Length: 121
Image (cartoon, rainbow, N blue to C red):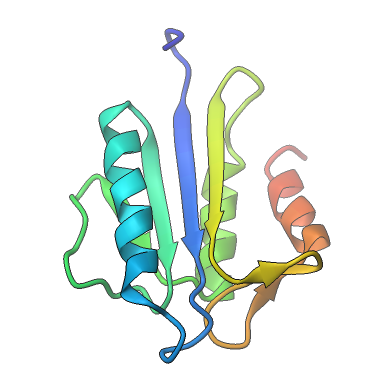
């Protein structure tokens, strides 16, 4: 790790809705979050409706994958500088034109670009 470097990871699993939000989505992303947390990353996990059977450690922020929470996570993530290290991990439903979030919400490539550019302007 470079001295003074910030490390952040935003983990996202929308899950679409209660019927398709399989428990493994949360388990897998929280597994990654725990390992990245141990490696010095600040982690934000946006998962389905924001509830999981086993809550993560207090150092891992857990929110829903609703659009407002994902945009807040992206604003947090976008504060990284060119010398920092950021990982954006997206798991589960999506296609070439969008990332499916929670419920009817989606995130398009232009949405993602705009959210990440706000902090640099």
